Image (cartoon, rainbow, N blue to C red; front, side, top):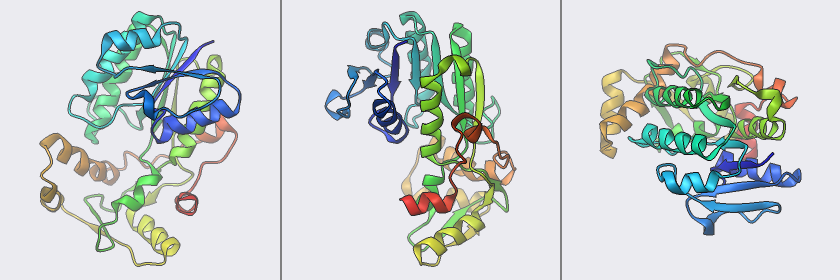
Length: 277
């Protein structure tokens, strides 16, 4: 079995790369810039971007199992994903492990969840085996939601999210890559141990950081207006705002036991993540 991973210079892909190397599992890192690839034993490096089909096909030759960490948010991300999936199929990859999104669907309220759904369908259409890791929102981002005034603002109402630590996603991905036949054609919903509201999240950040953090539930109009100062493109503004409306509707509140089932380890809480960070 030959493994390749994307995203080795990022958070999840980097954690998976370090874990595989520590376990003595050889693999190939597919990166945009070879100079940024981590120096790890038992690895080789190939350079390709998702939308460079020829380079991706060459980079994936001889690969059996591929960890495809979703590309950075962009208006053309789905096109990038489809190009890379096609290159993987042409190169002879047998099994794609893809970091998707909880509740991925053609009509997902979180607009970027629609791209994840379409990517899943593209992978299925090739006939390659798959393992979809449907991640909830990341607990690691909660503190980033806090504004300079100590307020989390968004139209999430009193909805809750079963957000997951990126470290837990990486642990699941590592387990799947090391024993891929046990996870063929499976979809895992990766969540934290509990669903929390943004008011609860603010209280946890307050307690851990020793500063006052609060949550202000915005209206939709307020949400778009408060983000206009960054002059985002419409797709980006919709993605930002729908992060909160998806929470409000309860689409991300379901708590799954998949992290523990796959890794044998209970998932981290927001408190755990803040203490590690």
